Length: 249
Length: 256
Image (cartoon, rainbow over all chains, first blue to last red; front, side):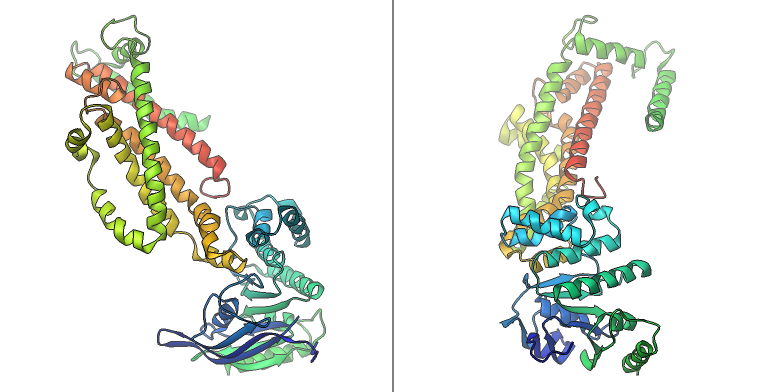
């Protein structure tokens, strides 16, 4: 996994974020290589969501530089797709139209949008619900739509803010497996925020642990376990214990 | 079937109570249901009393329907853009909102004298008053609809590549449709509520005008007929709007 020839697609250099007098994120550095799956983990208030939102361009850093794909981040853009915990689907659009929203906004020709939408509806297994509205879908299905719509928009980087936090355990496991399959197939770069240690170890190439007061990165652990990972294996448990100690110690 | 039955219980009880209360006395200030029914038939098709009211119902009804919908449309044409503007632009909100909030509690009845001075006796005054009644519910709910768009949806649209200028048509407008729809529905309802006041301005036809005439002639059974027709017309027009809403807002769990 650690291929030194691959370039950094995300580069966060000395980034601070203040909300008024409150330092939410202090002097933070992070590099992510193309195709890497990175989990940001930590207790609430550690700045993991703030860091993600800075990379997304929803928040501008008070100081420092954020570069994604050679370009300094100045605002949100379609190269960085975001998956929210509360889905953020457009309730007035069907599944198809939600997935086609991005291509449509970027002026992709209609015929091509239809083709893209068909492909991604199929990819996330929602062909039967293609014409349903979000309020008719379960949480898991909504999150599949949310993932499909950023993939359909050719996002190179997918930013996920506790995407499975609102789902029940069974659905979460399904979606974790599906996400890994998608990631392996597409070679996307994913930054995934979670507060669940097990989820981070299950998914990530690297687990970046953060602590509050001020929000900062305290460790960066490479997970070399082969996939699919066995959550009951001794290696998995070792990592879990170590990360847990880092976060709670 | 069950719903129809439940909905009919109270009106039927009311009818029985009304009948019991007016039965027997030779001269009651409130006419018994049967007299009202006869008056209604005469009002609709004539041939019973052969007086000034006979067979005039359709004329009055059409005059009021035209006034209600015309004034409602005028109110919507003014209130929708204003509401979108006030809801979306801080400057428009600071400039306009305080004035409208102050004018809003002034009842339509209080506007009646001024309206008659400005617009004169007759249909223009009536039109203005009905439009005024429909205006505020549309305005207030449109503002509310625009302001209650979830911020998350702006983020979602932005990260999918929506330019700031395109936010309004692609996010703000569709997201505020339920609020706008509620405003239109209430506005049309209010137009029916104020039609009688509106038609106190000396217009010749209209259900309100008919009620005012009947009142002066102590023809209470005609007054009640007018009330019943206004209620039924308002109810039907609300049903139509609701059906439209169900079609247009299929996506909204509150409407679909």
